[in-house]
Length: 138
Image 1: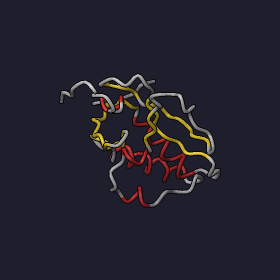
Image 2: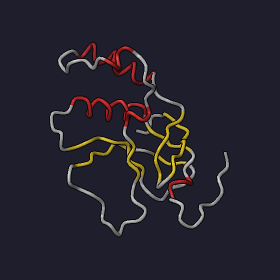
Image 3: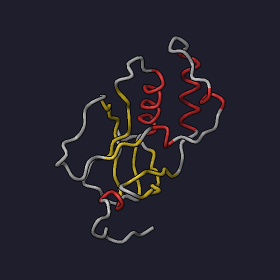
């Protein structure tokens, strides 16, 4: 899918067509958000500028009350890990206790098998569908 160059007023992230992210990173981010005792942070997949047709996402923790400087433009994209996951699989409904490592492994496997081929992301005032490329980036 070819996109034209962004027009004036378009968000630079609209140039993104594919996001590369390690499937383990998405599982870890999702698990940490469900498992957290400290509600003052959220774990997301962050994409840093410069935005090109193919970008990489990384694990990032947002601390409550922190923000990017107002003069920073464009700002990084933050994508909730749940955006990458299809709403299916009985193990996704029942998140196991931390002590039950065997059940956690089954849950992690279920999450990995439920990853979407495309993810919708709000960019500026529009929603963009990005192809996903799950790979080991480490």
